[in-house]
Structure formats: structure tokens, C-alpha cells
Amino acid sequence: MSDTRKRARKRFGGYAHKKQRGSRELEVGAQGVLITCNMNERKCTSEAFSLLNEYADALYGPEQPTDSPSEEEEADEDAEAALQKEVCQIRSSITARQQRFSAVSSGANNVLFIRTHGVDPEELVHHILADLHQTKKRKSRVILRMLPVSGTCRAFAEDMERFLSGHLQRWFQEPRRATYQICFRARNSSHSRREDVITAVAGLVAKMNPLNKVDLTNPELSIIIEIIKTICCVSVVTDYTLFRKYNLQEVAKEPTNQSTGPPEAANQTQESQSGEKAEGDRSKEAELE
Image 1 (tube, rainbow, N blue to C red):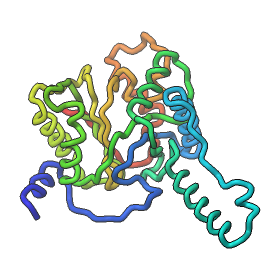
Image 2 (cartoon, rainbow, N blue to C red; image 1 turned 90 degrees about the horizontal axis):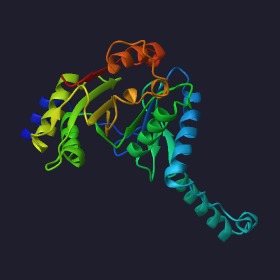
Image 3 (cartoon, rainbow, N blue to C red; image 1 turned 120 degrees about the vertical axis):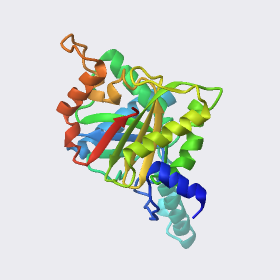
């Protein structure tokens, strides 16, 4: 094992692992939206597709329908037509997998992953939260949080270091600079230690530009790291505190004067009451300290 890989594992607290994953599962290289719900995944999936399509149509225009075989191809039963029909069916199957939104297994209970194609998940989700925050319209009953995922990698030391070293440059590489926080959660995973990951990510950001500073009160950017089994989902978002940790239920609530504590503390209390505990997976969430 190379010294580089050893150092990466020490920093991120990870271990080597090899496993093949199916196309219907959350996998490396995916972009999309991670969605948590309260014990009703079927209803949550329906709500998620409806909400994502509504706002995607507004941002990007209606999705174009896929091609289907013509009536003549259906009627023609000779060998050449049958072969052509089979080719068309294969092409239609490939096209269907490349539709704008498709659900794949996340690997955790009460957590959905909607894979996106031709859509910027960070732009789309921020647009949804901004509209709900402004209008205070409740457009979901079972969706709790909706987090964009701009990239995924294997949740092991050398993989995370290699991926994040390039992925985070868009926001933090000199001459860019920003205040930030790191939010971490792990589900069905025990090989990635919270403190190790947070410390390692903060070190990478500092190397990109020493002027990048931690701000837990009102950061310009929030680095979201969600690990499910052996997959690490990453995004960098704005307005994370303003939009109540991207909680659709909380962001649509009318403001009240009953809370005397800071918004973040009030939000954490509300989330625990609204069903975050019902996700059913052992998970941890922390911010950089």
C-alpha cells in the first residue's frame, strides 16, 4: 500500500473495501436528490416526483417524451421487422433509464434517492426551498428534508480525499474564498468516523485557500456529507440555516415569536418532533467545531 493511501485512511478513518453495486442502487458517480421521510416511502416517492417535476418544468421546460415504435413496426411480423422491434425496445429501455428523474435504492430505511439527468440538483432544490420559504405553501405531507447531491464517491479514506480535493475547488479554490460549516451524517455505516472526516475536509478546504474560514452562525456555504453504507454523497449549499436545514416542513411554517432561542436550535427541536427520529437508521449529524 502506498504512503498516500495510508495517510488518507488515517485522516478519514476509513478502511479498504471492494464491492460491486447494481444500477438500481445508489452508486459512485451519481447526482440527484437525497430525501428523508417519516415512515411512508411509497407516498414520499410520489410526492418527490411530483414536486421535482413541477419545479424542473418551470426551470428547464417540460421533459421531452421518449420515442416509441410505430404502428407499422408493431404490425410487421417478418424477421427483419422483429429484429428492428427488439432494437427499438432496447433503445427505449436505455432512454427510460436516462429520464430526468429516476428512483434508486438508497440503502437506508426512510431515505430515498432520486437520480437526476440534465438537471443541476443544487439549483433545483434551492429553487424549491426558496419558493416554499417565500410563499409558505405546504406542498408535501411526508417529505422531511430534501438535500441535493452534486457528487458521490466511495466512503473510504483515499476515495474521499481524492474526490473532495477536486470537487470542492469550485467553491473554495483560491482566489475564491468563503465562510463555511461542515454537516455530517452517517447511516448504516461505522467505518467513517465523524471527527476524522470533519477534520480531513476542513484541512482540504484550508489548503485550497487559507482565507476560507469556519462560521457556525451564518456561513455562506454548508458542506453536506451524507454517508450511506459505502457511498459518500456530497453537496455544497447556500442558505442552509435560513431554509431550516432544507426541511420542507419547517421552511413552509409561518414565523412565530414564541421561540427565544436561536433559529438553528429551534429548528433542531422542531425536527425531532416532526419525525426525524422515525427514520429508523442509526445516524449522526455534526457541524465543525
